[in-house]
Length: 128
Ligand SMILES: [Zn+2]
Image: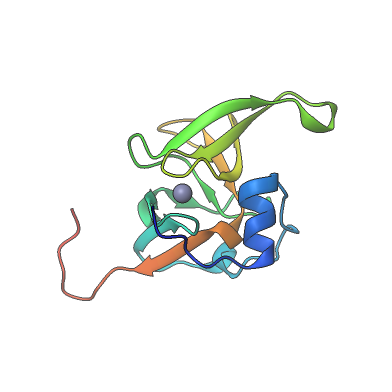
């Protein structure tokens, strides 16, 4: 049995019920340090801080994900056809993917900060 990581109610609602956090509510909106963003549900590495950018949306935004870390599927809830971003590790809902991001990918991973665990890079350690 995989070990269940303890989740807050807010995290559970996002990961399991595709809820969306209030824009501007995540402290990660303002996180500028270099490091790694992991899935709060399973600990999988999802994003590198190098791909984070300020989208002005009120949600932490990235223009690329770690290879194979994020799966996508079409979400037709709320009468819209959107592309849902899902953790490839645990299947939890992370946010949505839009095609209005900056180069080089032109993509915007619009994430719920509540389901991202930020891990600051250790001083003096080489980044891969
Ligand atoms: Zn996960």
